[in-house]
Image 1 (cartoon, one colour):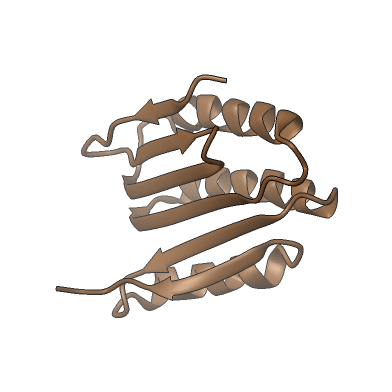
Image 2: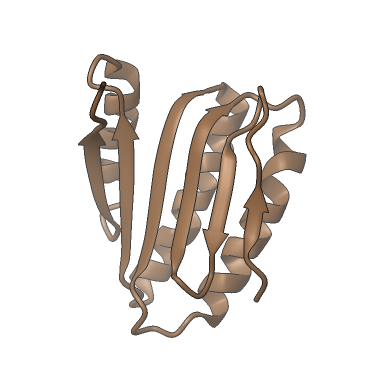
Length: 130
């Protein structure tokens, strides 16, 4: 599989999906005009990857989002749900949810994901501030 890289814009996060390294990174802000169109290739790549990745390979997902709108919320949850389904099928998936220590909403969203998707190893991590 080809790696998936989508550079960040003012409205969309950077996506860096390295299949051979079993790493997905999403960082920045997400409020695209058409969230479905933006997230479609990410969802398709993740679905293909999870369907083909070796069960023994541990997968790591890193989400370091500063802001996302409600339509992005639904699509981020759908990506997490795909990983959750794979974890239920036996894949080891570690998800890192990074948040600014001052941002209670991002902290709560990460904790909600942890409560909702119990088969995933979700780690809610405060980012270091400079």
